[in-house]
Image 1: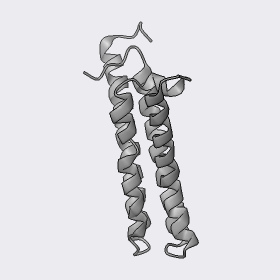
Image 2: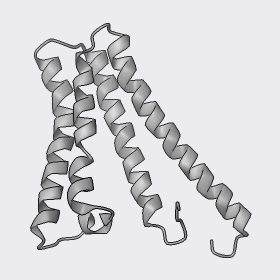
Image 3: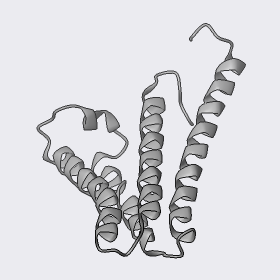
Length: 138
């Protein structure tokens, strides 16, 4: 891919950013639809987990995301992995618990879980795009 002209590479990177924006926007739309279609705003509790999810990464891992995919002896990286995993499990557990308690219906649960999957795909695409050597945002 290094032999492509610069304007073609810039166009490809712009397309990747547009794809990420579409994914995140789709996740937000699914989140809102899960509440609005069924006239029940309890599924918005998962937004708290979506806000808390990147916090351990921001505080403990900073910009070094490569350490998250390797086994390390660093206790801060281990704490980051644990807190991020706990937040991710909470993002799935909240709608499931609400469904079990009878607060939301099956449709809202399906939209909530599909919103979570779309957000996970967006995060994985971002990490893949961020790990490429020839792509630099700024």
